[in-house]
Every structure is written in structure tokens, then in C-alpha cells.
Length: 215
Image (tube, rainbow, N blue to C red; front, side, top):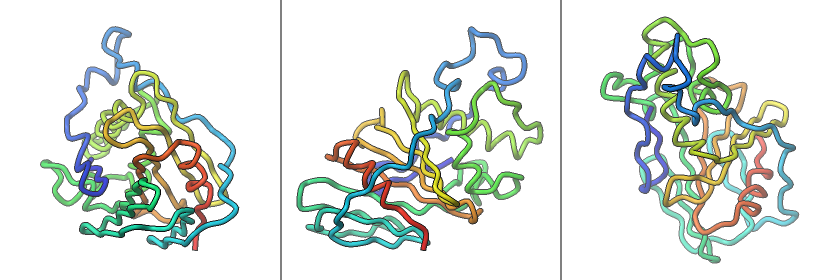
């Protein structure tokens, strides 16, 4: 699965996860990073005052600090704030989940939708039943490889839900990004939104996450 964050990250996870890790795995070959799932948390509190709003897909996000510069790279929106922080917004669709083996997107022939593929790393672990159809297993394997990068050795990943909106967020263990979120509209199957932030405290990042509403 290809994950892009502006011009900084183009992909984390193109490696195939060994089948040995699935059915019949022993403790010796289970990666502990694949055992944890996101921790449910209350919906974050948003800033009382915002400088402006960003509309991406059907997500409305309040930004507290005024922009110094706004750039676009392909479908990505990058906001350089006056306070030195940087926000990356990346809408994800099927074409963004392409691999060498699946140039049209790893979900193109799978039972998993784009949104579901983006949620698997946060919601499922190596202990959950895995799919047996090859096209579905490819999505699952890719998600488990993704999961290792997200959870790291001890990273705490949170999830919060408000009506049809669910967000997974954490302080990223992968340099150079400091904070990361995956935002999903549960009524949409073909797209979701990645958000990453640099030079921003996690508490401030959570306030931005807390401001998100559906249009």
C-alpha cells in the first residue's frame, strides 16, 4: 500500500509480509508491533477560535494559525504556518494504494474497500482471522506491514469517533514527521484523508483533529 505525505513520504510499505506470520505462527515469529490496535479515546477538544477553515473532500478542518505559504503537490495540500509548523493533507484513493503487483490499487479486485484498507492497521492485529482469498490477503499483508511502522516498538495510537467520522492519530515514530492522523468518513468507501504535522506539539495537533467535521 502506498502512503504519501506531501513530498516528504512517498511510501512506507511495499514489502510482502511473510505468510508464516499468519496461520500457525509461533511466538518466535510474531512481530510484537502487529499485536496492538488503536486505543479508543474521547473526541479531542478543538480550539475555540480558528484563523480559517480547510475543505478537503467532505472534511472541514479548522486551522488556528494563519498561513505563511500554501503549496500543492499533485493532490496534496501543504500549509506552512506563520508559527513554523507545517501541515500536510493527502486525500487517499485507490490509485494511491498501488503497488508493483497491483498498479491499479491493491483494493481493485478485493472485497476490502479503500476506507477499510486504511483502517485495518488500526483495527486488526495478527491474532485476528485473516482472509484466504489471495487478493484480500494481499491487502491484509500490506496492512500488517503498515502496522509495524505505525505502532513501532511502543507507540500509542488513538482512535476517536463522532457520528460517521472516525480518526486514528498518534505521534509518529518515523522521522521526519511529528504527528499523524488517518481520517475516515464511514459513509464513504473510496477515499480517506491523511494528515501529518511537523514542528507542532501533539496537544495542538489533537485540537486540529478535534475540529474536523463532515460537510
